[in-house]
Image (cartoon, rainbow, N blue to C red; front, top):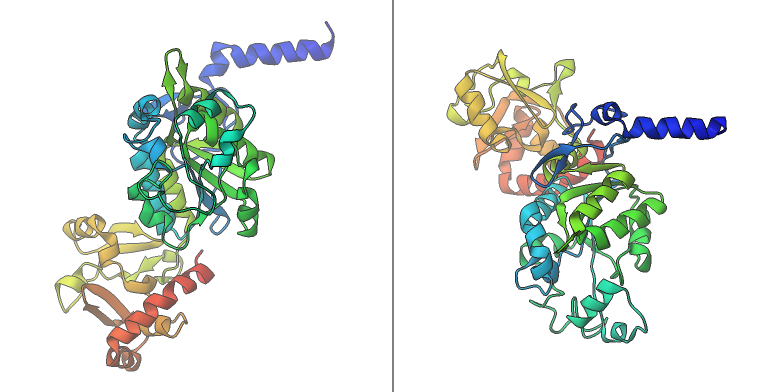
Length: 402
């Protein structure tokens, strides 16, 4: 046996040894991954494999959520595949988890793509098919009367699951052309991602070992960085065959990372970035005043440096633990509008500092302005100023968030 073969044998033995299995390799410490070598699986941890875990650090503006086949035939008890996928969908809480990802991506102003599955009459004339292609055609899965025909889609197996329609039909989500077998090499997904400037893709949807895994493989071959949200997928279960387990093994061996929905939601929210007016290196918002106190009295209270909480890139101080608890129960209600920048300034599309003495609560929201003169201008057309500021804020955020 030559030296190279000896080296390979030694590495193989190391990889399979109990010591190696107990000490999996990690490139970095990633949020949501414990240090005992576990990975999220369905509703709890399982032992991780002794292989590297590169991780994906989402970059604002460079990543997208991809949801594959969020359609009735896969995800509803009325769908034609529920008899074989329903157990896995229920175990994984897939329907709810996909919705959590839609919410997180929309909340972070992240791009969302949907890759659907449709079969038209001419697809049923194929001369040969694989096992599950044959099944899908036999049960009229994802059937549509033609690529230009929309009549009959509403409520059919090819339709979006109803709870997802507000996210998909919002005029912002990109629905690419349908994939025909399993992977995205038969549609325009890669083109649309490239044209949107996307380099990183977070994948969820159906079905785990078929379309999801195939999209993962295709996108990695196309040079994208891919993370899989495993419990936002599911697969068929047949006697002796567990499609989700088969997919999970390949997710872990091929993708840059595998996340739970909770991990993905946290990472997507963090990637949105923050745009907030704080005091220098301390990062304290509202000049150290207790944000809740503005809503409770005309004389706001100074917060204590010992009672603090973080929210959206700012540190807020509180006059009491009760006030802190009130804030944490609904931070977006008590945090100042427009990141604590001058409200009138945002209404004319610029960022200005504020004078804390201009603070006012109107319509149960906290507004600040740069000085008393500008406050009077803001209040002279309060509704119009707020409307213009609300329109301008997303653009200012996208331009200046860090």
